[in-house]
Length: 323
Image 1 (cartoon, one colour):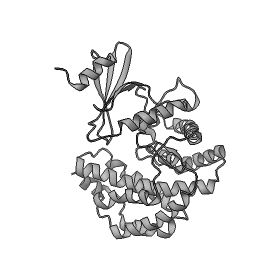
Image 2 (tube, helix red, strand yellow):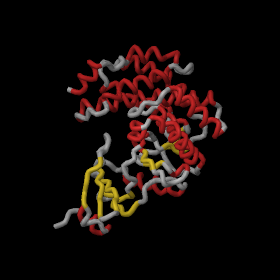
Image 3 (cartoon, one colour):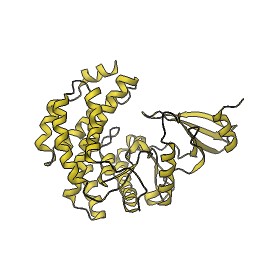
Image 4 (cartoon, helix red, strand yellow):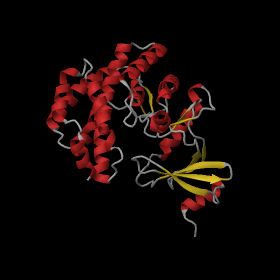
């Protein structure tokens, strides 16, 4: 008797397709490329009892496509079974393209600014709007999983960070895709302008300050972004939007401190709890982004609390996490 997966593929017309796995990240979702002649598609699946985000993925896919952006077309979906069949954007992942040719990073990021501005200017759907307290609470993974983390010192840092985020969050909220970075972007050179980036992994979108996704792109855990390029892209984004560079940089730094602190906890947890060690090599990069963000004048008064509470990752620490 066919299972739900087989029945789903049969009803979608892909029962006889060849299957090949597609590498995922730290989520529980699984991806499979289906090939049939010259056609291909991607099967995304997860256990609906564990991951309830498929309906959010469909909602955001519809919204992004309505803005004229390149979210994948949905060919078939069964959220009760945890199955979605979607357009295959191919293998031109931006992380890989930058690694192969670092000179392509700046022009592609310049295009990505237009994608972000399109998202920013669109009427938002109904989404959660996290508070400064929620953002700070989300960093507590680092207290649990990062070696030698000192909670009292981290709490002192979070108290200061929360005051800065409260100020930043007075700005009008716009859609943030939340995980907007090179690993989640497939480059589609045959498309034009803001549609060149093929967008993935946006089911956790929320509403917040527009600096959040800009920060996510420019402090990318998996890809080096030089401080000079970061400053240039912030300036270009501010010019195109009319934002104050000073206010944008403050928001960027506050969110960069929050996100990179949380990522240190996520990567440490993935290694210690789940045996997923592939991102441990990124810990020094993430810690570097965190330190740079904390050098902003609004965060500097309590950056020392963070430094004292969270040792920089060295070879010995990374090796211990990999055991």
